[in-house]
Length: 485
Image (cartoon, rainbow, N blue to C red; front, side):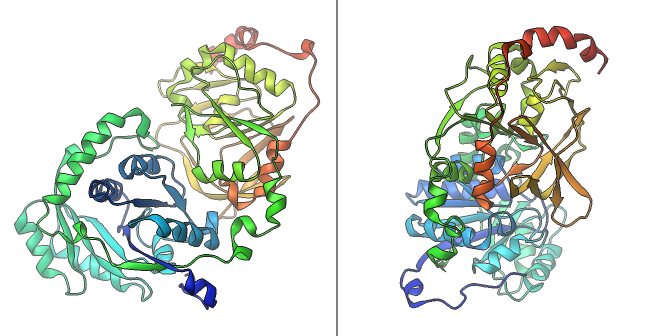
């Protein structure tokens, strides 16, 4: 467990504390409807003219996209292990300074993980609403809620949200079985029309289904309003949030002036489109804090790279767009040339797959990729890897996580492996060739600004023209190999 706030506060911190209504939506397990309900609740209060700040617990790229569209406000991650206690405290404080309501969506079950959703809620005194799919049970839902609420003494449970409730009679059975200190906040009927669309790594990206989401948000608001229990439709009690003293803030843990100049004058080109979109807002903010100029491009649609000193290929869904990525030979040539010039490239997960010689997609079709890192990528259905890891680079360590359903074969010898949070086995392989750093791990940049800056500042002597093989020629050379994979 983590020490509960407030700790011993200075008079200045107490004077600058702020209060804001806040609610932490958790559940006994995954797939209970947390994101659907959080999005509907954010949209409901937004429609009332409220500023709603939503946070997502743990590493997640897809849920925040949905929640951002629902709330109309940027959504960031809160994770004590990945980001640090001070970082989470400061983010909540900053949100409370401007918001009318703070919502935090948990991950997995309430007590799952180290740290868990319950750890985060307890640390910052945020009351928990237990979202529970009650299909197939009635009084048992009350027993489960009581068990969750009583499991630890340092959490506050605001009540239960009974999702997929069959009827008013069903809700009444649950309501009557609950103890007085755990109210039924909402009894939500079964309605498949509001469920958010999913695919193999989670929810579908918001940008792909924006209009469809608007319809579902509107339906979700009506869904909440139709509940016989209206505890969710009034603002929760205010919570007091405290600022972090400057000396303890994550970005001030070392000389602020030095951090601000780490990437001064450098331009970083970032891939961002339907194939590459797994980008933490906190990562972008840090790069700008370090002085970098950020420019974005589309490997799917653009024919050339922006002028830049370094390149970031984040994760995403290259496997859904492998044919288009492969056929954009102009962009492939541009990135290969960038690599050949010895400029820094950071490739994460989907970006790693793009860097390999080829990629076999979900339809078992193989397409040539960049070919700047030896190896073949392939999707493997429902099998995959996920979990928190520390990326161990020669330049330093960065907190990160893995979440993929692909594999890479015939790759070079790794320079290092990730260190798993709770298991002694080696984590994900980390590759470095010339100024390219690649691996499956998704990095949380604020956990170590100096190391991140070093990765983007890597250089390598430029190759000569005679050493360069164009993607078109490389496609011809590898065609026979591709057919056998």
